[in-house]
Structure formats: structure tokens, C-alpha cells
Amino acid sequence: MNDKQDNSRGVQPQGAPSGNANPVATGLVTMVIRGGCKVRSGGQTLDCVVRNASKPDSWQSIAVGDEVEFSKAGGGACVLKSVRPRRNALSKTDPEHPGSERAIAANIDLAVLVVSMAEPPLKVRLIDRFLVAARVGGVKPVLCVNKIDLLSDDDSSPELAEVRSYEDLGVPIILCSTVTGRGIDRLAAIMRGKRSVLVGQSGVGKTSLINSINKGLRLPTAPLRRDGSKGRFTTSHTALVEPEPSMEIIDTPGLKDFGVREMRAEELQEYFPDFRVPATKCAYADCTHTSEPDCGVKLAVRDELIRRSRYESYLKLLGATAGEAVGSPRRGDKSRGSSRRADEVDEGPFKCAKCGTYVVPEDAGTEHRNHCPNCLYSLHLDNKPGDRAAYCGGLMEPIAVWVRHGGEWALIHRCQECGALSSNRTAADDNEIMLLSVAVRPLASPPFPLERLNDLRRRDG
Ligand code: GDP
Ligand code: ZN
Image (cartoon, rainbow, N blue to C red; front, top):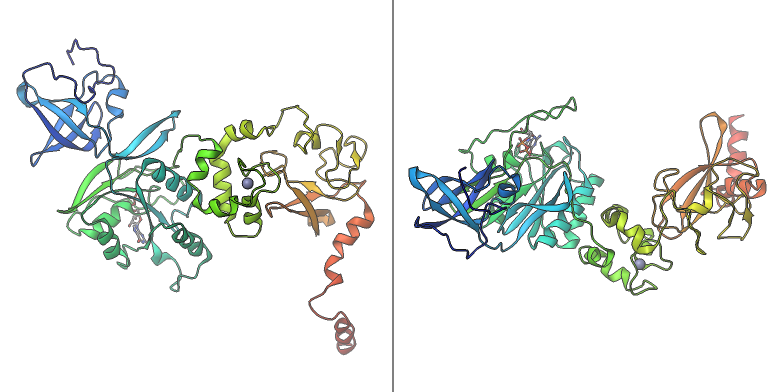
């Protein structure tokens, strides 16, 4: 574009003088394309270009649903002038620039996350991230569970129960199938008279749902590639469609994940309303529900009042900044605190938080010691063995012995704070009496009288 004006975003802020005699019109962005967008105005759809289109930022900051002002230049070309302030937006972080957010859609009444129970499998983490993004953006969320025909008839699968539990958070759930037609009327009813955005993984059936609302539309859909290859996305652009005159739906390409900007615990907790009541029992008013003792949220997770996957989503969203916020050392951080810490376990001697035994890992047992050889208690420091990525830090009680393949013994530990389970190989210097007492514990309270074994033996000869 031959343009002398220096406007780095290409689009002038609202209210800036247009600076030429061309009349300014307003319209609604229905699709963002390279270097510009399609704008609906006065019953027509026009292609608008932005100034400085060579800078991707100039057009990538526009979102479908934006209200814009543009001028009609000579030869029928339209040039974008400004984007009006947004009422709200559903945004996600840009995978190439994780620090910055990009609006998926703007000025919307509903954000509908479409998930499927199978093909592709359900990703609960995506639901939690979507709900945070919707609440951050000020958009009402809805959960649409599609391909319900792939489940058994009675809706009793545990996965479905997990999805349905989001109803307790006030999120409407609609079970749908574009094959049987179930739920399509309800979905249409909830979107009628509104502008909604449909988001979700590729292949969950977003486009099929729109086609089911208006069978005449026949937008292209794609069979899921079962070989794991990515294939071509049928919906390559975010675009606004109108299956009915009073129903605007913004269809989006498949999401792999829903990037949410990093937040500090205080802000993030606002978006986890299910933590609010349990958090009143936290010992510290500013509890981050990570490494603090006497945390009501961790107790509620242990007692299954908060689903573990919700808590894990919270921890994941808290991300690296949480480690700094709560002073919890990451792997490789050699700092020593007075509290029980990850690096005290496998990087040097440590004092057992349960029985006070001073443990020197190099002396005996295995190199990677996870529990005290005296009382066999451990600490909840790992999410996966050795990753030192758990925020909990709770005491883990030895609850059972698991005889692994080859006859090797492993201890099963259960976190007393959050209820997480883990298995840890036993070591040569483990207290044998303690080990045996854990191993035989079920025999102390059998679910049937042990004498019955004698009767059975006598009977069988
Ligand atoms: P999108 O990427 O989310 O827009 O998904 P599509 O609408 O392109 O659908 C992906 C595939 O899933 C297609 O093969 C559809 O026929 C199929 N599909 C869509 N809805 C359903 C449904 O309710 N049940 C079943 N079994 N398959 C569906
Ligand atoms: Zn807490």
C-alpha cells in the first residue's frame, strides 16, 4: 500500500480524524483475512484493507465481532479507519508470543465450548481453561457435549458425570448429537437472538452443529483423521455465519489448547468459584492453596469436595509464577529453608518431617530416596517420579505395599493434605518391621472372618 501515514497498528483509535474527504461508514467484522477483514455493512459484505498491512500486528489485532469504521476509497476499495471499543471478548494467549493475548471473537453474548466424549477424547483441562478465559473476558460460558451417540444409551459413564459436575458451577451443559439430533433444538434455543462463538478442538463437530441447526447451510466438515496426522482444518478461518436471521454464530478453527495468561493466585482464585467456601477454612487469609499448611482447599480436594482435576488445572494455570509467589524451590534450586522442601530429599541429608530421623541418602538404600527409612513417610513433592513439580508438599503416609513384576516391593503413599497417591520402590535400609506392618495391614481387619479359609480348605480336601 502506498501510504505515508505512520500508524503502526494500521487502524486508528476511535475518534481520530479520518483526515480525508472519503465518507466513513461503520460495519461488523465477519472474517479476518491476511491484511484486512470482511465487513458486513448495509446488507453487503465488503473487503477492507488495513494500512501498514505488511505488519501482521496491524490486522491480527482485529477480531470477528468487532465494530469498525472504514472509508470507501476510489475504485470501490475500503480502508479500515478504527475499531470501536469492545464490549467484551474471548481471548487466548498467542502460542508464538505467550505474553500476549489475542481475541478469538469480540462483542459476544455467549461462548460455547464444544467437547466430544470420544473422537477426539475429552480434555477436561481445556474446559477449566475455557471457563477462566470466558470469565476473564466477561462472556457467559456454555458447555456443549457433542457426539453423545458414541456413548452408551443411559448417560451413566463416569466421564459424563465429570462434565456434568460443571453444572454445579452454573455452567449450562447441553448434550448433543448431530447424528441423532439430540440437543440440537436446545442448543439453537440458547443461541437464538444472540451472537455466540463456538470453540473447541478440531473434529468435535462445531461445524456439524451449525449445519444441524440449518440443514440448508452445508458448511464443509471433515472426518477425523484416525492415523494421528493433523490433516487439513476444514474451518481455517474464524467466520461469522447466520443459520437463522436472528442467530449469529462465530465458527472457529480447532483449538489445540486454550492459552490463558499467567496470573497470580489472588486473581486466579476469582475464577475458581468452587474454591471459595473451602478457602474460608485456610489458616492463612492470603493462602495460595499450594504449599501452605492447613489449607482448606487442599483438604476439600482430599475429601473429594473439589475434583482433583479442577485443583490440578488451578495449579497448572498458576504456572511458574506460583513457585516464586510461595517461595517453593523448583528442581535445581539449592536454597535451604526451615520447612520441608523438595531439594532436601534427593540432594543431601534431610530431617524427616514425620519422625525427625536424620537421613543421609548416600549412606544406604537407593540413590533416589523418597521416604524416611525409619517411619516410611514421604513428602508430596513429585507429580511424576522425580519431577519435583508438585506444589502440595504434604506428608505422605505409607498405606500399602505393592508387589511389582519380578517380586520387587513398592510402597504406596497417600498424601495427607491432598489425597494424591504415589508408588515408591523400597530401599535396602527400610525399617523391615514397619514395612511388614504396612504389608499385612489388610489382614488386621479382613472383610470376612479369616477362619473361613480353614473351613474352605477342609471342605476342598
Ligand atoms: P469441527 O472441526 O469441530 O468443526 O468438526 P466437524 O463438524 O468438521 O466434524 C468432525 C467429524 O465429526 C465429522 O466426520 C462429523 O461427521 C463427525 N461428527 C460431528 N458431529 C457428530 C456427532 O454428533 N456424532 C458423531 N458420531 N460424529 C459426529
Ligand atoms: Zn488454602
